[in-house]
Image 1: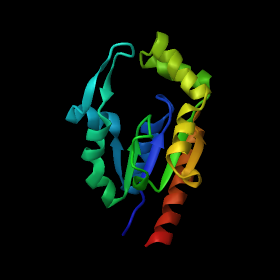
Image 2 (image 1 turned 90 degrees about the vertical axis):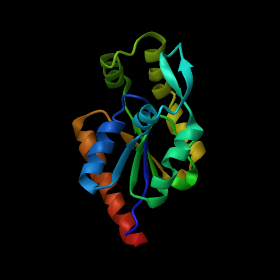
Image 3 (image 1 turned 180 degrees about the horizontal axis):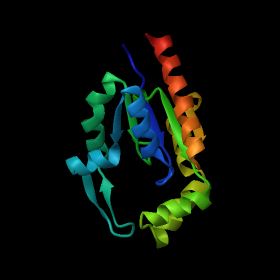
Image 4 (image 1 turned 90 degrees about the horizontal axis):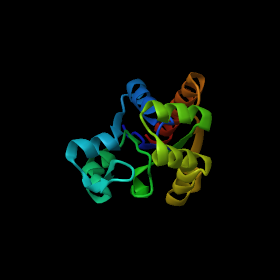
Length: 171
């Protein structure tokens, strides 16, 4: 039975991992956190001193995930989306969080200074939503609010319904 591939993207701290893990638990789909895959495989091409984080080797990430993606039934979680092949995803969800919530979440992760401000600005200016709209067909890109536990439940219900419909239409 064919299953869709989903991309969960958005600014760090918007709830991609929480949503992705719960979706995988409820659907039996495979959950992939690109940051974890990169860390495990050391898929980096350097280190960014300014942001105090490794620089992802996007080509190696693509190579690492290609076989899994071609099988279907994968939920991918990453804060960027413009380097993934368009053919990989049947739908893209961009999670959005109000800055008052996002600030607290990022601060609790130890973000400060330029890294904190740049991530807040990224959310204010809809940077990742625009990146998704430029990278994928407009009709498969959807924004979801991700502020409260109620938003999480609504998003889970909405995505589960979408998956069920996709599977009816494609099997």
